[in-house]
Length: 88
Image (cartoon, rainbow, N blue to C red; front, side, top):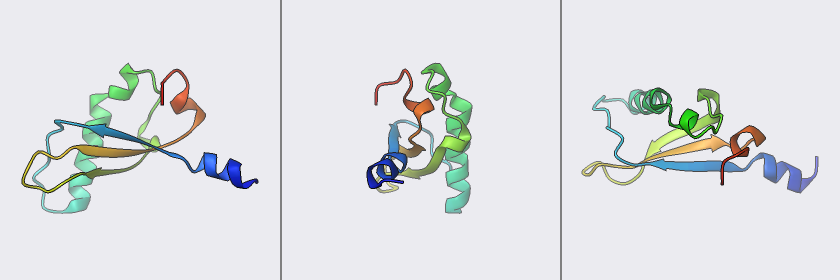
């Protein structure tokens, strides 16, 4: 596999969501799962016809300090199905 092909396959897409309610669970893993569940429940990607499923979300994490409402950053796998019909 060529270096450029591998680099393309390893490309990650990022999506930032604002005003997502933050869970008050004590463990980080539980809060991340709650954030992921919220994103899947929201079905935002279905309305965009982006074809994103739970398997496409690599990681979720909050940006900033916990004193304020923090944006949620999603790392998505970059595949052909995710970019079909969606501007990236």
